[in-house]
Length: 166
Image (cartoon, rainbow, N blue to C red; front, side, top):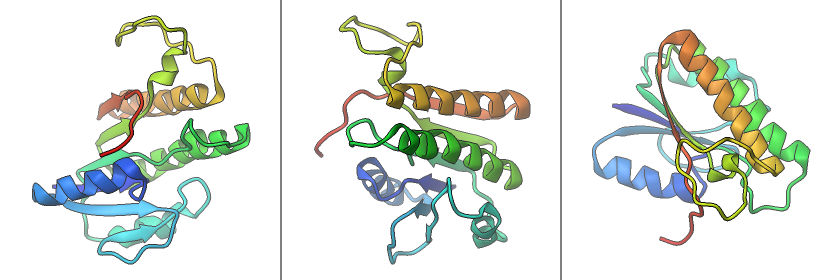
């Protein structure tokens, strides 16, 4: 299986690629930082030209995208940064997956889409983000849900809470 990981050089992405390689998956990696490794493509999803990125995959079928690229809630970023990295990048990723005819996505979101009020919640809780990070991640979810419905494709949305350490 061929797996494309966006945001591959972040904490979760760097750990995930090791696990997938050990399990025998062929992985393709993308992030906006310079790295020299096999099947790595420097690409800023919300900024660079998608056609150039897609040209890297001539003759390759990507079975699934794991979308980790995002502005995270623990950085001191502006609202524009969150919008660019969470919303615009996901819109651009949607164009890429449509052009590449990819039908399976795992989208890494956040529990921040539920808001923060110290009440236990599960997947049936109301989506009510109360910060820009949660709002932009919820918007990114909606972009991919719309794609899923339009193309009758597979979408898994993960909403982890705090991720830290090994």
